[in-house]
Length: 348
Ligand code: PMV
Image (cartoon, rainbow, N blue to C red; front, top):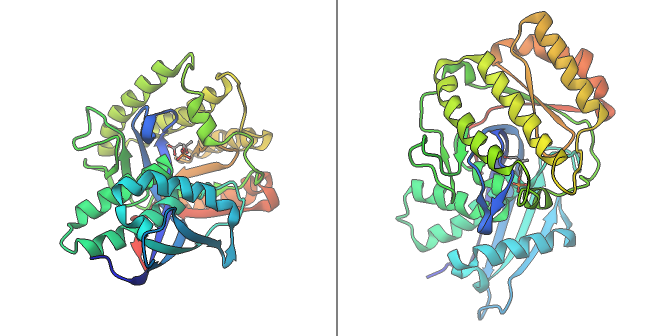
């Protein structure tokens, strides 16, 4: 029997894809598998308060606030999310919900909050589900949370558990699924422990093309088949790279994935460019610095102008100095966020 009322709170991280998800089928099924580092500092904290309605609501009943302020603008997205997950959480119409959310990163920083936000909300809803089935295994809990998060935002499926998460079926990865993310099941060299990611805030403006539209443009894209095949190949290659810790190969693969993601945007119809001049300046600086210092700093990109600077922990002191001295100047208001690989979401 569902409990009458309560509240639950989760902190859930953002993630950065190494092999990118770009293109999807019906029901948020990815067109290709992807893999990401889970971040630590960039996270959303969501508190979900729920109380049972006297009789089931006809529609979903909820309020949402960001940093204590009601956010009517978020409602359509949450409503769509509720509609999608309702078949798997039939208790949804029996409650009134208050969703309070806050992000650790600055508003409109161009850092997508959909992965951390949707995974945090999915986890809160799973707590209610667990009240109904207290014997549920932790494994099932996490898998279903990832499944639900996926229905909010594809990449959110990768923000539940683990430092390295794969989402999407791939012949070379046992247990992988299009429906939810799994912790990467193979050996990962210690050089990837606590891998660093500094996010350079190049452009904080609203993206001119949403990721939903971007995914859609992969239908009828002239290079989609090659791209989806390539993602599979890159995942296969990553398996031995992760095992050996070969950073030169890692860098080549990760940077190529980032540029391919943007190449897909530039070659769709309509075409678009999300990189800004400073994105390219930064990439060139990173290449020059890597060449000069023989360090293992590299970049990756999301669907935006910001640059994620990736480097191993033992190069942290050097690379952080390079970022402060040379790269910060290309960021809006000199802003960047030092982050590193984390362990996934947790209840707080
Ligand atoms: O989760 P969505 O639908 O916003 O897609 C995000 C896709 C990328 O961030 C560009 C790549 C990825 O795999 O995270």
